Length: 159
Image (cartoon, rainbow, N blue to C red; front, side):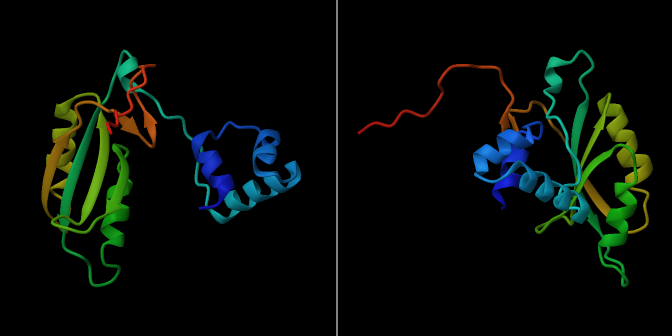
């Protein structure tokens, strides 16, 4: 992956001036590359990684494995696009293995997740089965460790 993209993934708020120094290129070149990545759709959005356990109103994250019948025109793409339009759905991935799609949804309660699966997802034409999992605790997300420990917890290596 491009070095600039790696730096932006680590901290999207880093200034173009600092990025230019880190990469050994001009600030104008950094701005030009970022604008090109945005125009081409390589950079889709800038987001903060939020430790929801620190918030008063934590949400329930649900992982749903979905088996579907691929359509003759479009395969998995059309059903994945339909599922993606639900506001509860945060992410949809095409997977290999026993299930076809992997969904991440958020809701205020487990009941909301259950209602989404039973009333919206399972009733869709083409969905043949689901398996639902509730995330209990997040230890690491998008490369960021979520606990607030400052201790050096590296594994000890013995001779």
